[in-house]
Image (cartoon, rainbow, N blue to C red; front, top):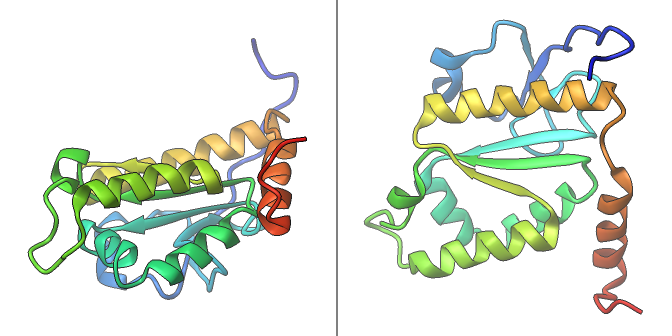
Length: 174
């Protein structure tokens, strides 16, 4: 099926100012700006409240799930208000199952938390193998969101119901 209208050009990619330059310099998007984001590391200009992508190294993910757990949970709650939110992790699932040397977090606990939170907070976690693949996945998420958004194919109602459930604490269906 083809679109009945031409999709406008994708807006510039916003890169959070707190995202360290050394982490992005070799994968910098050609059409991007640096700006403080409320959540995540990457978004689309003008749509910063609709889509966000957070990028994490394996070490950062383990730290966030361990010592930074309460901060990460608050971040997950903030992500509920977005139409699309994802966390791309710069390692494979197989690699993730071998924790960093300093971490005391059991890998099984880390994976179970990611799975539970992806369901509870409707956030997509994607293991990308390496930094280059994570950046490619980030761009792909942004591009496809833009296309689907402009085609009117995003269901915001389901996300709103999840957000209301979390805000009210009423997890039982009636």
